[in-house]
Length: 222
Image (tube, rainbow, N blue to C red; front, side):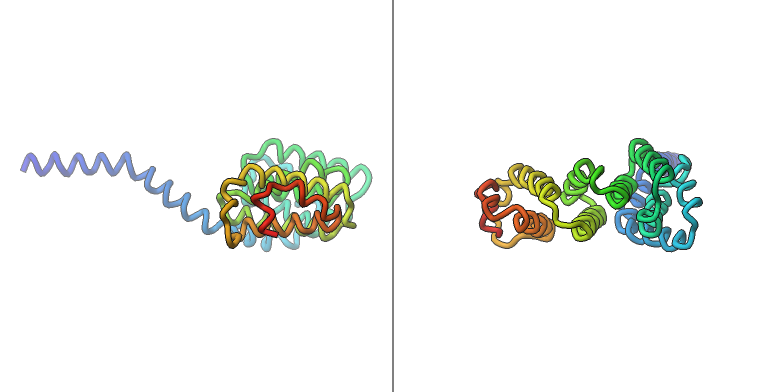
């Protein structure tokens, strides 16, 4: 009886210590699958909020990451193209501050896209390379979001050589870093295809001679 009691007590203590770890792992795994739903859900919830309310949310340091990312997304969709002068400067400062403070990849990604939409000439060079690097992110939702936002930025532009050069040079470096992995690739996966499609856009603007500057291991993918 004493041995049974000790065994039960040991199991109880182990569960007490391990339960938080198990629960955290379950919640962490679940969040990966719910990221898109959470972001889309909050964005829908905030869809009718005024510009002032959304800016107040962006300035709120207590707001959770998903809510913050959603608020920035709604501001981007509804107001990023209709703010000017001093108001625009103040909102840009708020977004830059938010990006500096956040540890959330979703907040960071939404902020970079918003800043580019507000002033692509000022922010394209500093924001787009980081979005391009997210094409290799372990979280598929981040990868898809970054790809969609990069496409949105370049498709709403005027195919300027300056922007194409930034995209080309960033992806060129990424391909050089992964050239050993792509050497024997017969059929590119989704993430590699994303890079190739963006490179094709850049090469179309810059000229086919740029292909010679890519790693030889990547040429067959074109």
